[in-house]
Length: 282
Image 1: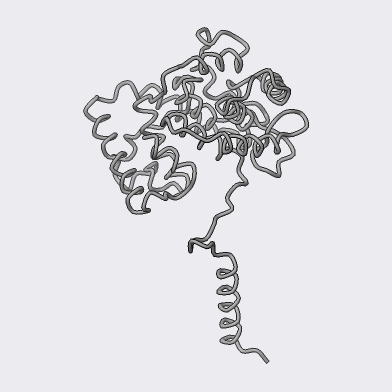
Image 2: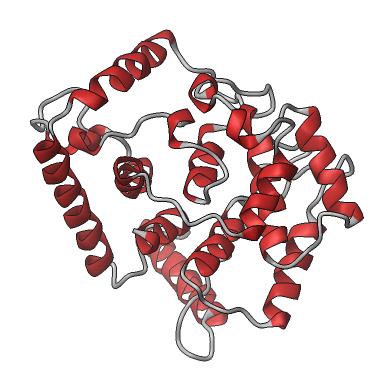
């Protein structure tokens, strides 16, 4: 008969064994967090924005990884095991491949772009895609869901205070607040201007982005917006311009303080890959 204490001791020994077997030579433990198919593009964008060079070997391996998971119809799924694509992941992986030096004339990229166009293009992508494209200057902040940093100044008991959101979501929307209020975006270079022509079916300058804040293709509308959310977005869009500048400035300082706190207390590891990129860019 195995007693509860013995079971616990056996379980602990198994854990020790597993940890020892998976420890790297430098003493750390790797995290195989490569399932979501929107993480690598964010890293590629950050490297380009921050002017950090990548070796040809690294670019080749990244390209190989992305293209290996391209679906038969030319799209890219939300994660490695997806059977259908989303405009969100298809667009950002297409842009990532272009950043890595691929030509729009390559068969894989042409196939991906045709799929994007068939689904309506970035205007019908998920909200995260629209946000990412905004700081890449491939979309307008007028067409993204508002993320007001002033919410952090509300009393803690307020129903919509950010601290009431789950940690993983809150930690990502924290730097997004900063991007949204500052309308941070890179300067459009030759590649960005070319991508504007490739991604959209109409001239970029003629697009009414504000009209498409809540337009999503079926592939990206995984959890449809509720009526309450739509009404909230309508009100926030109209209240936002009325917020005094001194309050906006104070809210930005508070958000930045929270970002620094997260960075310093995690030794700049951050809680997750997404907010690690966003915090770095802020």
